[in-house]
Length: 351
Image (cartoon, rainbow, N blue to C red; front, side, top):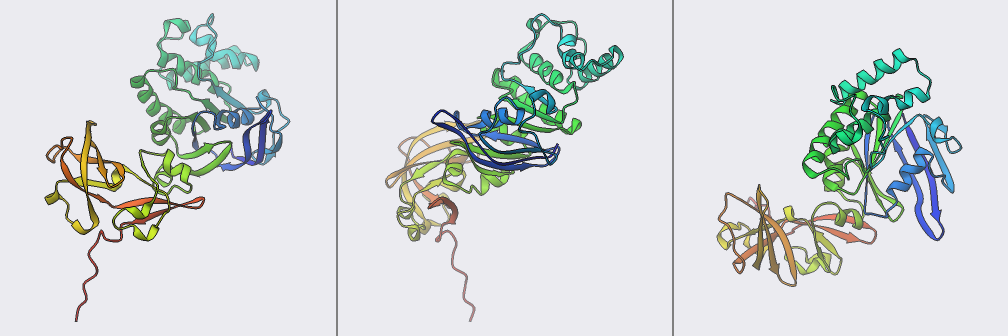
């Protein structure tokens, strides 16, 4: 299903949950709605589903406005955070529920349910009740039930929130593979950055009822378009004045943030470009499995950087050199990526 949203607004009393929201989603894409709690993600999802009505604006599916259509008329599958399975029904009966509402024949129902049991890896569990299943299995039943009536759009509201971390990671890979095989347009709400980056084809960052940015996970991470996106995605250290760092003096009093991967922290002999580096003192180190996370004080700031396990470990109190390779600088409402002006030697002049 191709989706177009044009200028939708939604308020609950004085609270503006959606402010002039516009976006377009191509058919078959897996889209993550990512943002802080209370930012408007679920409100957008519920308006697409027909569970909330926008105060103004248009929602179009395949070019047809659906604002006035009931949820059951929109050809949507919805998976809730708490599964919402029917406790007294078996796995088979839960998956078959929507098909029976559509008055499909018994043969059609059995064929479709068996197909979905195979797709979702639930073979052999069709006679069990929800309380006899693990959390991951219950969530798969919820997905299968939503897919059974062959919807054109699948909406997921924080689908993995109630599942433990190990199973959640397994289900992410499973969901992406399943959606790719089915080819259905899917939108899922999450506040988990790792989840959105790992699963989604595109991410929409939602904050205070507005879409801050829409794009691929890589583009949003590398090229954040607003100060909120730059500070929300990934780890970061805020700077009140970018110009206080060596190599960024031209940025003056503009605020900025530094990502850990932008920071090189090492003993004096390990930093090749000394003129671009500043003195620092290690405050703490944390083992992260693949590397060390190092907190260092340099000038008025405490920055975070990563250090390879192949290098000698640093200890709190160590005197180090700190080289900041680049910053995200906040210039009004926009974000710019700025490279350290002293990081590279000047081009040689040949006479």
